[in-house]
Length: 376
Ligand SMILES: *[C@@H]1O[C@H](CO)[C@@H](O)[C@H](O)[C@H]1NC(C)=O
Ligand SMILES: *[C@@H]1O[C@H](CO)[C@@H](O)[C@H](O)[C@H]1NC(C)=O
Ligand SMILES: *[C@@H]1O[C@H](CO)[C@@H](O)[C@H](O)[C@H]1NC(C)=O
Ligand SMILES: *[C@@H]1O[C@H](CO)[C@@H](O)[C@H](O)[C@H]1NC(C)=O
Ligand SMILES: *[C@@H]1O[C@H](CO)[C@@H](O)[C@H](O)[C@H]1NC(C)=O
Image (cartoon, rainbow, N blue to C red; front, side, top):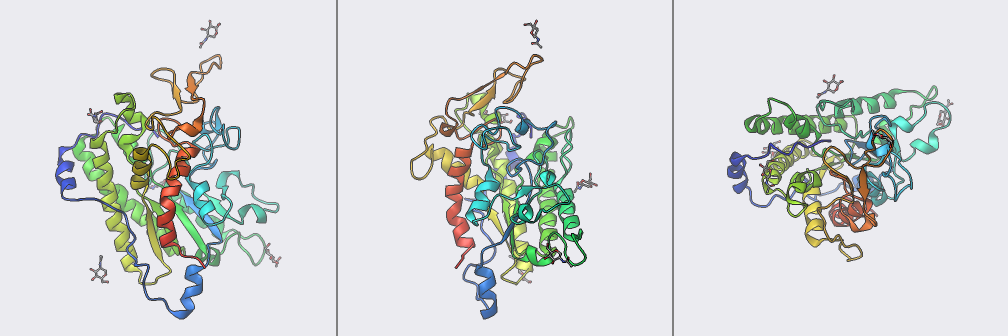
């Protein structure tokens, strides 16, 4: 989850990027695709479960307490009122995404106790996302990578709760929606390497996207019909980066790297969607780049209920270098400050939005989700 701030200057990317005008992530499938009569009801029925894979933008409590700032004060201040494993003052992307489908936010995998009556708890699906994870093993942390998260899920499909039933069936997966987040931990791990170079990063980006595409394909082959995957948010706008400019401006150079990732992701997803002709099976890109940028430029949400006066400045931060939101010294003294009203900040800490930030992002994403998921 740490982004190194010294390694994103790549003039070669300028050359690539100038050839790519405005990248808008879209699905490869046309919404006006012809539907067979018997397909209609399934395509338009609401998903009954949500399964989630990914990182801290989606984690709702999987990362172990001893490892995670998300289980420390002042995380969770707004919701649920105490630290509970979300990397925010309150709700995160998963919660708003579930809401879109009329589902409760699914239970975090590690918080589910095996045995006993779990029917109610697992009914809305399950969240396998771990803060700090990537598609590869991020150095210096023990979060299970995305492949391992998918393995956890695969095991659950096979575990029998009694002679005839498993916790989840293939049929459940067919009527589910899957959310996959990947917000930059692989790149943070790469740039933290002592041997990291600009050239090396350039060759690493396609490897990350290819592994992500392989994971999406695997989820699809397990039977998931609707998969939503995040495009990278503007990394150059995260407080960790903008503190160099006293939170005044995004680092445009770093955002070019992000655009390259997002372009490759778009190509990979188009290819996957093209491979499956079946209308039921499709992958949709959730454009966190566009939605973050829109909210940051507007300095608030659509309706104007929320105003983020200094949108690049986080609500919670360490009192000096070496401390971050949630840091305490040996005597337990707080080494961070929290703004008086988290609703007035887009960012919560150096990397993650506040609940109000996520809500504003969700309002932007909602219309594209509505175009992709048409319900009765
Ligand atoms: C943007 O990031 C690059 C690499 O981290 C750095 O060299 C450059 O100084 C930054 N630019 C600004 C305006 O902060
Ligand atoms: C994911 O983690 C597992 C377990 O540590 C490891 O065996 C596997 O190679 C990793 N996968 C990738 C793509 O890095
Ligand atoms: C197995 O569990 C399911 C779900 O709880 C239940 O509906 C079913 O009746 C059970 N079957 C047997 C044979 O116990
Ligand atoms: C889609 O697949 C067909 C053949 O299956 C191929 O001819 C076409 O180029 C593909 N399009 C894209 C965008 O990959
Ligand atoms: C803890 O408090 C004591 C007494 O005020 C002080 O001497 C000591 O330096 C503090 N330790 C830390 C780690 O701040």
